Image (tube, rainbow, N blue to C red; front, top):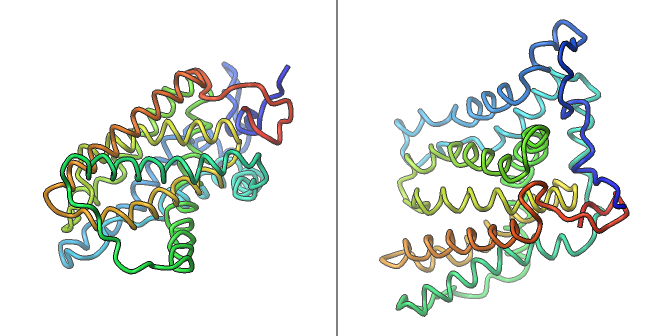
Length: 291
């Protein structure tokens, strides 16, 4: 019988409290009972601090990217002290998982962007002109930068902290969809105040919801936050390379195609991995995650 993966082994922060149980430590009692509420409140409050500045400078960024990670760090420390904070930060070091999960993390988002571009072009859009070859070093540099800005800054909070808490008393699919709704709402400053219009709201929010399912599957299967970071960074890097070349009348078509392909991929994952756990239990080595 397969052993549970790190994703399934709840820390004290993720275990449901028994009826009538008391939380020790007066200063930590309220944060420990309201971890999720505190995390989401801090994530939104910190990230949205810069939004009013767009009134003074419309070209400034309306969203502080490290809000989710900082919110997770603060909540972990307030609710569980140094021990819980160390457990949270230790998730960033969980790189040693089966290589196939990195293949999925890099290959799936690149495949989705590539197929969406090909379908958009086959529907009449001009073939994208990527310009001069940016070179491997520039691509790797973009990926590395994105791995930090959207990888660590977001995934430590969303998948590393919030997802395990949401899954402790509900099916994984429900948890992923709830987190997807919060994740989409978190992007509202960019959707409302971004003057470039590079994220059409409806297809973007649909894509985020489906992507939340895919990331939950990766996390539950591998037990690794870094795998989720790689997926997030790979998608953003592929999008940054291709999307600007299709700005114009076909740009919205491209986004709807990307969103619907994400939905299709999420439906496949749900069918294969199951909505209860979004993971399969065939691997007997807990360090490898659930496969």
